[in-house]
Image 1 (cartoon, rainbow over the protein chains, first blue to last red):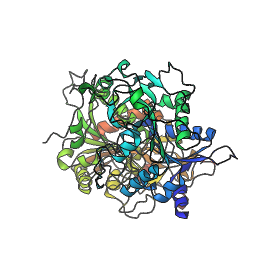
Image 2: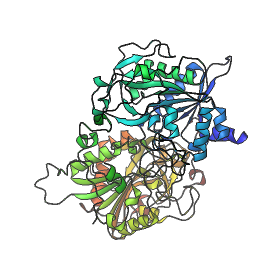
Image 3: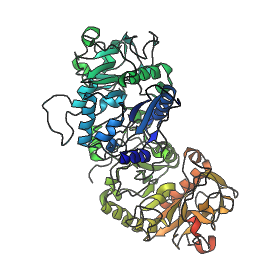
Image 4: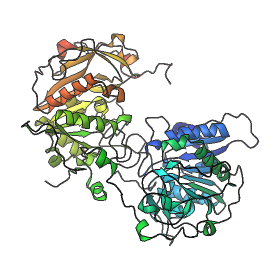
Length: 327
Length: 304
């Protein structure tokens, strides 16, 4: 235990709650934002400064008696450390156990396979999980290199979070077909809420999702939205663990949007067990066609040449061969 | 030559220089961070960094063909041969980067690649070091910039070793060579707000261009005799230029800083000649007399 505390003191920055007294003490949430693939600016730390979303969460935690621990260090995932937390907040990307040096992502230590397993076991046994935006673009391969094949199709992480990742078109205002106003944090979301954000498209939704918000996809621009309404915020039970996911939170503006922060807070409060909610599976009634994906929406098609080309025509990049192939 | 060079976008020629006969010099702008990653070199996913966007503008304006990379694995003799000069805004040991959170995730340089680069400079390629270029590569095998005794061949090429820096502040410059390209229009009382690396073990053949006037500086590292912060030197046949300046966006918006940098690039690529007779012994005769108290960063208690 001493070693853990030293590790935490050295590696992590604590968000200390302002409240001196509370009945049960603050909930402890590990706010984890390692990027093993694309690293968005809003999660990037300059030097030792917290990232934009870490600072936003820190403020949210101070105002709401949640004790966030901010880390990007995958080695923190040991059974002993995991036991300390009530829930895990992920804004991650890529395979956190096997990152190649290809320029994408940060240089923080990797998660071990044992750490990944211990983490997923802990969710199953009752820890909470809050996935945000790129959290669904994490462990997208069925298995991490070196992981034992358990014979399932989607990765264990993907099934836990509740859906697989397809992609997204341009940032644009969102339109919604459904909101569960009874879910914590959703009470005061206006029905004409039109946040400017990035909207992921998903596949293989778990049938036991409790849909909290569903996208009015046909109203959006881009080939990936050429499909019927599908969930973008949901909750589900993974064994005894409470799992919450929201696709929102790509733009810096969202982290200053009180409506988004309220929804996020509601998800965190529910996942940590501070509040309860009815999460009866409703996906098959709210979004019955969510798992039907027309051929034209199965894969990202760029509507315009990528921005780098059009805005910086003279930007000649010298890239590794592996990268040139993927572009 | 295998096509390792990838031109994103249309291979549009630089417009406005149709009458100019000389083909533009090809300069690699390399900004991998194996140590501290400056905010200005961070690429948001695939977007060019602030530094890269500024260098693009400079390249268009001055007809220099800048190519950008952070991929250390591309340093092979064949690739190196395609450039006229190399501009480094790098940090840390580019050949050895533990996964400790510091720096970016771009591929490392190999030791062979590093040696090939140093050899190419000796054989006539140009080198432009900017700011953290001096905080690049450790001395010998040590991980500490403070304590290792041997001088890394990279630092011999560059002309000095890094000690550290205190907080950003106004740095008054003493202009030693106002004839050097880019220096003509620098006002004699020029001072810039920047982060100033303190340095030691200066090469004795430095042609000092500008000196940091330490007398008005705060922080323990500057309590020492004045030392060079902009210089040129010959690494055998190669032209080496260094400027300590360039920490954040503000200084890159300073037209005098940019002018000095452009002059350095133009000289290092051989576009312009200059007299680079060693002058360190007269310009900064006491630069290497560094009190022990100025050899390690001591943070003032007022700073966090």
